[in-house]
Length: 290
Image 1 (tube, rainbow, N blue to C red):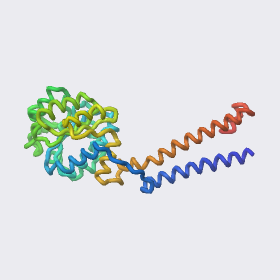
Image 2 (image 1 turned 180 degrees about the horizontal axis):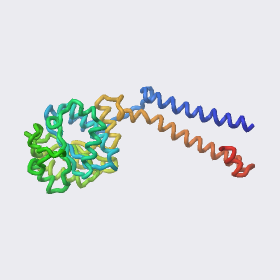
Image 3 (image 1 turned 180 degrees about the vertical axis):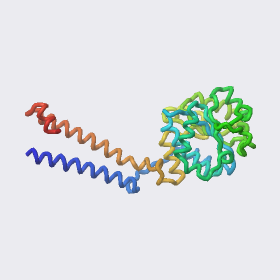
Image 4 (image 1 turned 90 degrees about the vertical axis):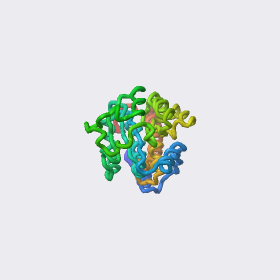
Protein backbone atom coordinates (compact mmCIF):
# COMPACT_ATOMS: atom_id res chain seq x y z
CA UNK A 1 0.00 0.00 0.00
CA UNK A 2 2.82 2.37 0.78
CA UNK A 3 4.48 1.80 -2.59
CA UNK A 4 1.17 2.23 -4.40
CA UNK A 5 0.53 5.50 -2.61
CA UNK A 6 4.00 6.75 -3.45
CA UNK A 7 3.50 5.82 -7.08
CA UNK A 8 0.22 7.77 -7.16
CA UNK A 9 1.90 10.84 -5.72
CA UNK A 10 4.66 10.54 -8.35
CA UNK A 11 2.20 10.21 -11.24
CA UNK A 12 0.12 13.14 -9.96
CA UNK A 13 3.14 15.41 -9.63
CA UNK A 14 4.46 14.46 -13.08
CA UNK A 15 1.03 15.14 -14.58
CA UNK A 16 1.00 18.62 -13.04
CA UNK A 17 4.50 19.36 -14.34
CA UNK A 18 3.46 18.14 -17.79
CA UNK A 19 0.43 20.42 -17.89
CA UNK A 20 2.46 23.44 -16.76
CA UNK A 21 5.20 22.70 -19.28
CA UNK A 22 2.63 22.30 -22.07
CA UNK A 23 1.02 25.66 -21.25
CA UNK A 24 4.43 27.34 -21.08
CA UNK A 25 5.53 26.01 -24.48
CA UNK A 26 2.14 26.77 -26.02
CA UNK A 27 2.31 30.31 -24.67
CA UNK A 28 5.75 30.91 -26.16
CA UNK A 29 4.64 29.50 -29.51
CA UNK A 30 1.60 31.71 -29.49
CA UNK A 31 -0.87 28.81 -29.36
CA UNK A 32 -2.26 30.03 -26.06
CA UNK A 33 -2.62 33.76 -26.30
CA UNK A 34 -5.43 35.46 -24.43
CA UNK A 35 -6.73 38.65 -25.99
CA UNK A 36 -5.31 41.77 -24.45
CA UNK A 37 -7.12 45.01 -25.08
CA UNK A 38 -4.88 48.03 -25.15
CA UNK A 39 -5.84 50.87 -22.86
CA UNK A 40 -7.03 54.23 -24.14
CA UNK A 41 -3.96 55.99 -22.77
CA UNK A 42 -1.58 53.61 -24.54
CA UNK A 43 -3.44 54.12 -27.81
CA UNK A 44 -3.55 57.91 -27.42
CA UNK A 45 0.18 58.14 -26.68
CA UNK A 46 1.06 55.77 -29.51
CA UNK A 47 -1.15 57.59 -32.00
CA UNK A 48 0.27 60.97 -31.05
CA UNK A 49 3.83 59.82 -31.67
CA UNK A 50 2.82 58.01 -34.84
CA UNK A 51 0.72 60.73 -36.45
CA UNK A 52 1.76 64.05 -34.91
CA UNK A 53 5.55 63.83 -34.84
CA UNK A 54 7.71 64.26 -37.91
CA UNK A 55 11.32 63.32 -38.69
CA UNK A 56 13.85 65.53 -36.90
CA UNK A 57 11.27 66.74 -34.38
CA UNK A 58 13.03 67.29 -31.02
CA UNK A 59 11.71 65.44 -27.96
CA UNK A 60 12.73 65.89 -24.32
CA UNK A 61 12.86 62.83 -22.05
CA UNK A 62 13.38 63.24 -18.31
CA UNK A 63 14.48 60.14 -16.39
CA UNK A 64 13.29 61.05 -12.92
CA UNK A 65 13.67 57.65 -11.29
CA UNK A 66 16.18 55.42 -9.56
CA UNK A 67 16.89 51.73 -9.20
CA UNK A 68 13.78 51.09 -7.10
CA UNK A 69 11.47 52.21 -9.92
CA UNK A 70 13.52 50.91 -12.85
CA UNK A 71 11.44 47.77 -13.32
CA UNK A 72 8.23 49.73 -13.64
CA UNK A 73 9.43 52.69 -15.69
CA UNK A 74 12.30 51.54 -17.91
CA UNK A 75 10.10 49.29 -20.10
CA UNK A 76 8.02 52.36 -20.95
CA UNK A 77 11.10 54.28 -21.96
CA UNK A 78 12.28 51.38 -24.12
CA UNK A 79 9.10 51.20 -26.21
CA UNK A 80 8.60 54.96 -26.51
CA UNK A 81 12.23 55.63 -27.46
CA UNK A 82 12.06 52.79 -29.97
CA UNK A 83 8.99 54.42 -31.52
CA UNK A 84 10.56 57.88 -31.51
CA UNK A 85 13.70 56.62 -33.22
CA UNK A 86 11.58 54.81 -35.81
CA UNK A 87 10.00 58.17 -36.53
CA UNK A 88 13.54 59.60 -36.78
CA UNK A 89 12.89 62.08 -34.02
CA UNK A 90 15.79 63.65 -32.13
CA UNK A 91 15.88 63.05 -28.39
CA UNK A 92 17.37 65.19 -25.65
CA UNK A 93 17.71 63.05 -22.52
CA UNK A 94 18.04 64.66 -19.11
CA UNK A 95 17.65 63.42 -15.56
CA UNK A 96 16.24 65.38 -12.66
CA UNK A 97 17.08 62.48 -10.34
CA UNK A 98 20.62 62.01 -8.93
CA UNK A 99 20.70 58.36 -10.06
CA UNK A 100 19.53 59.23 -13.55
CA UNK A 101 22.99 58.88 -15.11
CA UNK A 102 23.21 55.25 -14.00
CA UNK A 103 19.67 54.60 -15.19
CA UNK A 104 20.48 56.02 -18.63
CA UNK A 105 23.64 53.93 -18.90
CA UNK A 106 21.72 50.80 -17.94
CA UNK A 107 18.96 51.62 -20.42
CA UNK A 108 21.45 52.27 -23.20
CA UNK A 109 23.31 49.02 -22.59
CA UNK A 110 20.22 46.85 -22.13
CA UNK A 111 18.54 48.28 -25.24
CA UNK A 112 21.65 48.62 -27.39
CA UNK A 113 19.79 47.60 -30.55
CA UNK A 114 17.69 50.75 -30.33
CA UNK A 115 20.80 52.93 -30.56
CA UNK A 116 22.55 50.77 -33.17
CA UNK A 117 21.97 53.11 -36.11
CA UNK A 118 21.73 56.35 -34.14
CA UNK A 119 24.54 58.84 -33.63
CA UNK A 120 25.25 60.59 -30.36
CA UNK A 121 25.12 64.35 -30.71
CA UNK A 122 23.07 64.13 -33.89
CA UNK A 123 20.10 61.85 -33.13
CA UNK A 124 20.26 61.99 -29.35
CA UNK A 125 22.16 63.48 -26.44
CA UNK A 126 22.25 62.99 -22.68
CA UNK A 127 22.72 66.19 -20.72
CA UNK A 128 23.12 64.35 -17.40
CA UNK A 129 21.77 65.23 -13.98
CA UNK A 130 19.96 68.53 -13.58
CA UNK A 131 18.66 69.63 -10.19
CA UNK A 132 14.91 69.16 -9.92
CA UNK A 133 13.40 72.38 -8.62
CA UNK A 134 11.03 74.96 -9.98
CA UNK A 135 13.72 77.55 -10.64
CA UNK A 136 15.83 75.15 -12.69
CA UNK A 137 12.92 73.73 -14.69
CA UNK A 138 11.67 77.23 -15.40
CA UNK A 139 15.14 78.28 -16.52
CA UNK A 140 15.44 75.22 -18.78
CA UNK A 141 12.20 76.23 -20.45
CA UNK A 142 13.72 79.62 -21.27
CA UNK A 143 17.19 78.44 -22.35
CA UNK A 144 18.88 75.08 -21.90
CA UNK A 145 22.29 76.45 -22.87
CA UNK A 146 22.18 78.95 -20.00
CA UNK A 147 21.57 76.15 -17.51
CA UNK A 148 23.66 73.30 -18.97
CA UNK A 149 27.03 74.04 -20.54
CA UNK A 150 28.29 70.46 -20.91
CA UNK A 151 26.69 67.09 -21.46
CA UNK A 152 26.98 64.13 -19.11
CA UNK A 153 30.43 63.35 -20.52
CA UNK A 154 31.93 66.81 -20.10
CA UNK A 155 31.65 67.97 -23.70
CA UNK A 156 30.19 71.46 -24.41
CA UNK A 157 26.66 70.99 -25.71
CA UNK A 158 27.13 73.83 -28.17
CA UNK A 159 29.45 71.57 -30.16
CA UNK A 160 26.68 69.06 -30.95
CA UNK A 161 24.50 69.33 -34.03
CA UNK A 162 21.38 68.34 -32.12
CA UNK A 163 21.61 71.39 -29.85
CA UNK A 164 22.09 74.01 -32.56
CA UNK A 165 18.36 74.57 -33.07
CA UNK A 166 17.11 73.21 -29.74
CA UNK A 167 17.35 75.45 -26.72
CA UNK A 168 13.99 76.30 -25.14
CA UNK A 169 10.71 74.60 -24.25
CA UNK A 170 8.94 75.89 -27.34
CA UNK A 171 11.47 74.07 -29.53
CA UNK A 172 10.28 70.66 -28.32
CA UNK A 173 7.38 68.90 -30.00
CA UNK A 174 6.97 66.58 -27.02
CA UNK A 175 8.25 66.02 -23.48
CA UNK A 176 8.14 62.53 -21.95
CA UNK A 177 8.49 62.58 -18.15
CA UNK A 178 9.20 59.29 -16.38
CA UNK A 179 8.50 59.71 -12.70
CA UNK A 180 6.38 58.43 -9.82
CA UNK A 181 6.61 61.80 -8.09
CA UNK A 182 3.44 63.84 -8.59
CA UNK A 183 5.28 67.02 -7.67
CA UNK A 184 7.60 66.60 -10.64
CA UNK A 185 4.70 65.98 -13.02
CA UNK A 186 2.93 69.04 -11.63
CA UNK A 187 6.03 71.20 -12.16
CA UNK A 188 6.22 70.24 -15.82
CA UNK A 189 2.55 71.07 -16.23
CA UNK A 190 2.93 74.50 -14.64
CA UNK A 191 6.35 75.41 -16.07
CA UNK A 192 6.32 73.78 -19.50
CA UNK A 193 2.81 72.83 -20.64
CA UNK A 194 0.76 75.76 -19.37
CA UNK A 195 2.99 78.68 -20.42
CA UNK A 196 4.60 77.17 -23.56
CA UNK A 197 2.02 74.60 -24.75
CA UNK A 198 4.57 71.76 -24.73
CA UNK A 199 2.75 68.43 -25.21
CA UNK A 200 3.48 66.17 -22.23
CA UNK A 201 3.41 62.41 -21.80
CA UNK A 202 3.73 60.95 -18.32
CA UNK A 203 5.30 57.57 -17.65
CA UNK A 204 4.53 56.51 -14.11
CA UNK A 205 3.42 53.59 -11.94
CA UNK A 206 -0.08 52.18 -11.59
CA UNK A 207 -0.37 53.68 -8.11
CA UNK A 208 0.34 57.21 -9.34
CA UNK A 209 -1.44 57.00 -12.68
CA UNK A 210 -4.88 58.00 -11.38
CA UNK A 211 -3.72 61.26 -9.74
CA UNK A 212 -2.09 62.22 -13.05
CA UNK A 213 -5.23 61.60 -15.12
CA UNK A 214 -6.77 65.05 -14.43
CA UNK A 215 -3.90 66.63 -16.36
CA UNK A 216 -5.05 64.67 -19.41
CA UNK A 217 -8.68 65.66 -18.87
CA UNK A 218 -7.64 69.34 -18.73
CA UNK A 219 -5.51 68.98 -21.89
CA UNK A 220 -2.23 69.61 -20.09
CA UNK A 221 -0.97 66.15 -21.05
CA UNK A 222 -1.47 63.77 -23.98
CA UNK A 223 -1.67 60.62 -21.91
CA UNK A 224 -0.39 58.60 -18.97
CA UNK A 225 1.46 55.29 -19.25
CA UNK A 226 1.27 53.15 -16.12
CA UNK A 227 3.79 50.43 -15.29
CA UNK A 228 4.83 47.42 -17.33
CA UNK A 229 1.30 46.74 -18.56
CA UNK A 230 1.23 50.01 -20.49
CA UNK A 231 4.65 49.20 -21.95
CA UNK A 232 3.38 45.82 -23.16
CA UNK A 233 0.25 47.41 -24.61
CA UNK A 234 2.31 50.06 -26.37
CA UNK A 235 4.58 47.47 -27.92
CA UNK A 236 1.59 45.48 -29.12
CA UNK A 237 0.46 48.65 -30.88
CA UNK A 238 3.87 48.72 -32.54
CA UNK A 239 3.01 45.24 -33.90
CA UNK A 240 5.94 43.52 -32.20
CA UNK A 241 4.14 40.67 -30.46
CA UNK A 242 7.17 38.41 -30.65
CA UNK A 243 9.24 40.74 -28.49
CA UNK A 244 9.96 40.20 -24.83
CA UNK A 245 7.65 42.88 -23.47
CA UNK A 246 4.71 41.98 -25.64
CA UNK A 247 4.94 38.30 -24.75
CA UNK A 248 4.36 39.05 -21.07
CA UNK A 249 0.67 38.62 -21.83
CA UNK A 250 1.29 35.07 -23.11
CA UNK A 251 2.73 34.04 -19.77
CA UNK A 252 -0.64 34.48 -18.05
CA UNK A 253 -1.84 30.86 -18.65
CA UNK A 254 1.34 29.55 -17.06
CA UNK A 255 1.02 31.79 -14.03
CA UNK A 256 -2.64 30.88 -13.59
CA UNK A 257 -1.92 27.17 -13.87
CA UNK A 258 0.90 27.39 -11.32
CA UNK A 259 -1.36 29.19 -8.85
CA UNK A 260 -4.25 26.76 -9.36
CA UNK A 261 -2.11 23.65 -9.02
CA UNK A 262 -0.25 25.07 -6.03
CA UNK A 263 -3.55 25.59 -4.23
CA UNK A 264 -4.78 22.16 -5.32
CA UNK A 265 -1.66 20.33 -4.14
CA UNK A 266 -1.66 22.14 -0.80
CA UNK A 267 -5.32 21.31 -0.18
CA UNK A 268 -4.72 17.64 -0.98
CA UNK A 269 -1.61 17.62 1.20
CA UNK A 270 -3.46 19.12 4.16
CA UNK A 271 -6.27 16.61 3.69
CA UNK A 272 -3.87 13.66 3.66
CA UNK A 273 -2.00 14.97 6.70
CA UNK A 274 -5.27 15.43 8.54
CA UNK A 275 -6.42 11.92 7.59
CA UNK A 276 -3.14 10.31 8.61
CA UNK A 277 -2.93 12.28 11.83
CA UNK A 278 -5.88 10.33 13.14
CA UNK A 279 -3.90 7.12 13.16
CA UNK A 280 -0.24 8.19 13.28
CA UNK A 281 1.82 10.66 15.14
CA UNK A 282 3.42 13.70 13.43
CA UNK A 283 6.96 12.30 13.40
CA UNK A 284 5.87 9.21 11.50
CA UNK A 285 4.01 11.32 8.92
CA UNK A 286 7.02 13.59 8.36
CA UNK A 287 9.30 10.56 8.01
CA UNK A 288 7.05 8.98 5.36
CA UNK A 289 6.68 12.22 3.39
CA UNK A 290 10.41 12.90 3.43
